[in-house]
Image (cartoon, rainbow, N blue to C red):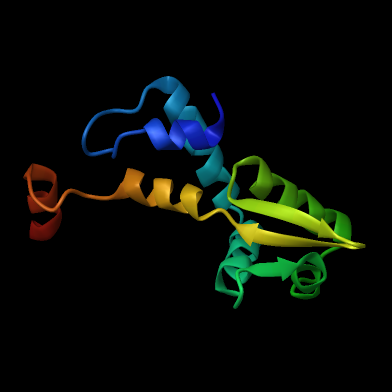
Amino acid sequence: MELLEILECSPPLTREPLDSEQAAGVARVFKALGDPVRLRILSIVASRAGGEVCVCDITDAFELSQPTISHHLKVLKEVGLLTSERRASWVYYRLVPETLGELSALLTLPASGPTAAAAVSR
């Protein structure tokens, strides 16, 4: 099962427990986001007007080698957070909003019920 399919079929954590395959898939995404460089890359792409960024602009934002940046971009693409398109000699990266939407839905607390009440009382 592909990662985005795992996220799409994963219920919110407050509704029912994830099975082992769902948990492993979701953990891969969070592991990718757990790296500060990858989180910054995702932020750079997500906040860019027009919704896409040339790899040259991403590389310029860091004091890291091009192969290191390429590795981080590859990880973000493998977990479905970014997509890319080659244009001549440059590659442009875009966010995959569906993946972020599914992660958000997975972590959303219900508007009412015992879990929401407990969160409010803290």
